[in-house]
Image 1: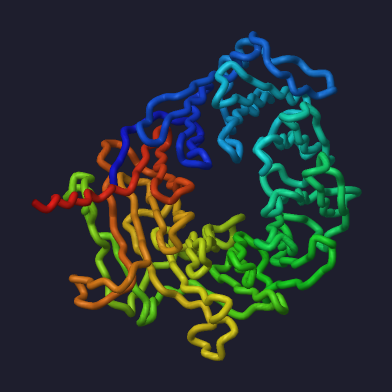
Image 2: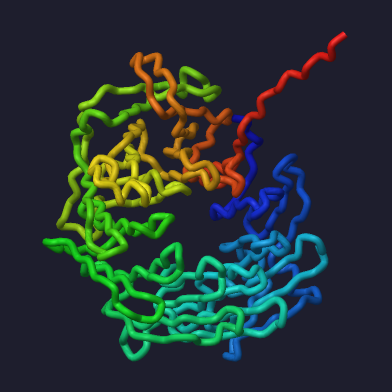
Length: 495
């Protein structure tokens, strides 16, 4: 892979544009736009400059509030930043002073500002249409949707959580929000094309809503309880209860991770007990339980990161994982159950784009990533139990705890990982290849990739929308890695 230079960033605010032509970076109170092919700076804006310049003022809170002082503006760093869906606009926000600013990529002089006022600002993000902005106020007072097209605002009262508990349908037509009215959990469905007009409002069976997750088809919702109870409900967008799941016995501490299969056929649920429950969409009952085990059975590919390979290679080049012959025993860290939120359970559940593979990371085994093979909808209908049940396929063992892992958004069998050190890791589902170390044929490749930079410890990894590049982030810097293009020899003309 080809790596770029190291650039500064703050708060991890680095993002490719939806078309992958530009990359956005926030550095303290300034946002920088670069071209992704040459990394030349195209635009740069500073938050707070528009306070002394004419702008399109979208509005402010009707409550009495004190405008931010010069000192507050000078010390305000950007906390949220993002692209609109068509890459035309860039959103930046500072929750400290409660101000959102919007810039236009093709018009450097255009600027819009939202002053959230005394109600404060907890979170801000783009709506799917790319012309509306969602502002969640502090203390769960309301969510305000500002329209760049009309300059008007729509208000929805009492959202339960500013960082979760809401979803948009895949086509962006409906906005679904978990709310709390009269001490009861409720769900509101709003039509985004009609200025977020209320379509349906109904009570939820939950007593302390933790979050909601909309199915890929957009007709079913998974709603689960808070940390005191392990229970998940399946409801339609019309408010009908389809099913309820709670494992027996319920060990408490609630649900930690939930993920939908891309086809909507399965829903995987995990708590703090190192078990993954697979629910099917016909009865919403469990069809399989994937449990963390210290002993890896035969038939599973076990890959181990070589020791001291970073020093040996001076952070340059690719080094394959060492393939270990199972059965193999893994070390499990036993949690202290007497403490709140013990270090156990599943910290990540994510499907690849085709749904054929499931990545799982357990907190009691932080240096290991598990990859499960998942049946397709056709396999699920098969009478062959070996094809219709998910099973462990590969185990990736690292020298340091895995801090981030992400599937390629385009290629169905590629995952990138990082462990907070001067390297990154790639696992790819390939056609049959020959493993020289074991002398066997395998259908996957696992490689360690050194980052050719000193004192750069990758703590987070993100794919570009086209799946050809990666963003690697350290505490206060970032770099990008792109697939090296192979030189195709030109054919010599015949004489």
